[in-house]
Amino acid sequence: MAYDRILPFNDLPLLPPSKNVEDDIDILKKLVTASRALATTNSSLHRLPNPTMLVNTIVLQEAQTSTAIENIFTTEDELYKAVSDTPREENIKPATKEVLRYREALWEGYKMILVNGQIDNDCIISTFRQIKNTTAGFRPPQSLTVIRRGQSEFRSGEIIYTPPRGEKIIENKMDNLIEYLNDDIKYPSDPLIKMCIAHYQFEAIHPFSDGNGRTGRILNLLYLVNKNLLQQPILYLSKYIILNKDDYYYHLAAVTQRNSWKPWLLYMLDAVEKTAILTNQLIVSILNQMEATLIHGKSKIKWYNKEINEAIFSQPYIKPKRIGDMLNITSRTTLTKYFKEFEAAKILTAAKDGREVFYINDDLIQILKG
Image 1: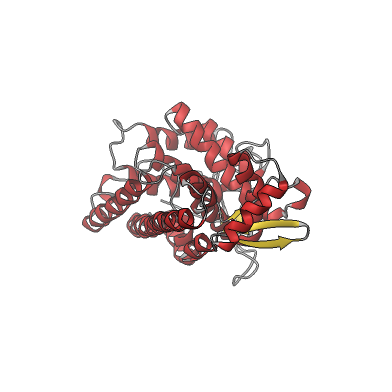
Image 2: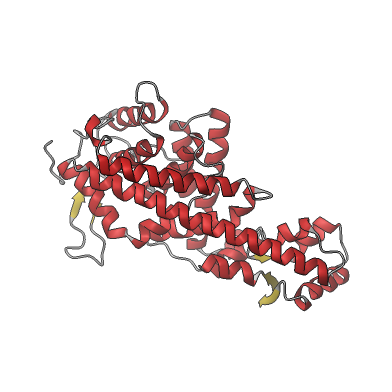
């Protein structure tokens, strides 16, 4: 396979790669442990009283870390404040908006695959548009998109990869990718293997002018849900990638340059395994803390119940209005009294931000910090 990083990689092979790639004994062993870890995490998800409650915890972490891979940084404090209320758009920092858009893109994609039953171009383009807040689609044939070394790297600005380019080339390669993912009769590979292979292919096609990394990482999670390996798109894959970022890009390049699939597959399967273990630990820790807090809360506050307990564990920062709506309390004085009881019981602590007051679930914060 001839490859020149300066020229568009129009000879990017269609999927699947040769059969012996996934028949390697080391890959099969890793597939077993990764699958087992993922199944354990999925089982823990079923124990949650409301699995979507993790939208503002684990999913928010995934969103924050995935955008950090693209050198877009925001603080957890800014994020938790943003999701605890509906602040005015102009009051949210640009980096925080990027993270929140990632989270919304993940959940919009999740809803689409539940309706459509598969990942298709509409789902992929919709995910990209949500991430980038744009109406654009696949790169047009004249777009001279290239991948360059970062400003902090040796030989910064040097072209390291030129993705495919030309009339209908991106569309044809994406059609092949989608068929590979969805046609399990024609391509009867294990779903985890397919996810790993398809992730490389998506990044190599690089169908959009920007936002491909984040879109690709969301597609990984959507595919796992689509194949019933996860009940919800909750897997903290981006943490593994950012901790092993150099290896990630090295193995991607090795597939392109040398058709070296084995190290890439082992890397991605290890990412799934380690991430599944981490995610499972987070879920179990949250469940245990929820149970302990419920027992403590009911012993200290006469109106404390399971629904209130779940609400304060739905996100690390909470505004009084959320609890007021649940309890049908409209009086600010009464609501203030209730939150004083939270503080007295040391279930929540108050934090001021200008004129705003947020109430923080410190136990949940500590679990998320790991």
